[in-house]
Each structure stands twice: as structure tokens, then as C-alpha cells.
Length: 197
Image (cartoon, rainbow, N blue to C red; front, side, top):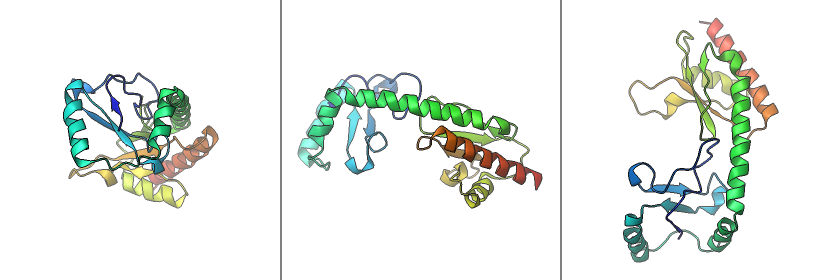
């Protein structure tokens, strides 16, 4: 089990900005995993803890045992200690930032119906639907699926009684050309649906 007391090397898929100091806002513990950063098969996570939390958590782990496989941990520790993990994160942050910027540019033609804004972190954009389109995010998602696109409706993830209408657009796994073609197809879907209302 890793015990990390200083900088959070993760910051997820943060495209821009700096990793935050240990413990997050107000010194709260944070949990991270390597699933998105390296490989989902690793099934290894870690905690970023303020100093005061380390001893109780360590005692709990010693009493209850760990559930993570011990086999990949030495290789992962070496990967982190060698600096290769930090290099990997920097490279991926640059890649994701470029892909996000490409997606934002490609959707510039739909800003009258879609609120497209850059986000300093993550691997998805959450784009609110602008008023007046007259179509729900679920309808757009269904029509986009018919066109071979994977566009998620934010409302399908909501537990609120009146969920917001927005689209979740993933960009991390696609090159800029693919994002451009998909954006053109999505803009066509949005225009067609808006005309039909």
C-alpha cells in the first residue's frame, strides 16, 4: 500500500492547471486509482492523506488486510519512483488538452444550441443545451447513437427530479481527425432536430 504525504501526482486527466496539495480542500482525504491513468486491469488505488489520517488508516489496513494484488505493486512503485509515471502524466495531459481544444474548435459552429466551454480537467466535456432548441438531451443522445456516435445525456446520470439537459462528450480516446468528423455529425444531428421542432 502506498502512503503519499506530499503532492498528488494524479490530478486525474487534468489538461491544464496544477495538481493540488495533499489532502485537497480543507485537508480532506482523496482517493485515486490507476484505472484511467494506466490500465483498468491493475485494480490498484491509493489515498492522498493529511498527516493526521495516515496512522488510523494504516492501522485499519493492518487489521483488515489489503485487497489489492501484491504482484504489480513493486513494478508500479518503480514506475512512480523512476519519474516515468510523472512523464506519462505530463504527456497525457498535453495530449488530452490538445484533443479537448480540437473538440471545442470543431463544435464552434453549434454554439447557438450548445454551450461549449473548455474545462481544465477530465476526459469529457459537459455541454449544456442552450434554450430554444426544444429537444431534450436524451433525444439528442438517441439520434446521435443512430448516427454511430456515442453521446451521453447528462440527464441519464442525474438523480434530481428536474435534471439539467446537457451532453457528455468524451474526447480522450480519439485523435483530432476523428473528433472533427464526429463533431460535424453531431452538429448535423443538432441542426436536424432543431429544424424538426
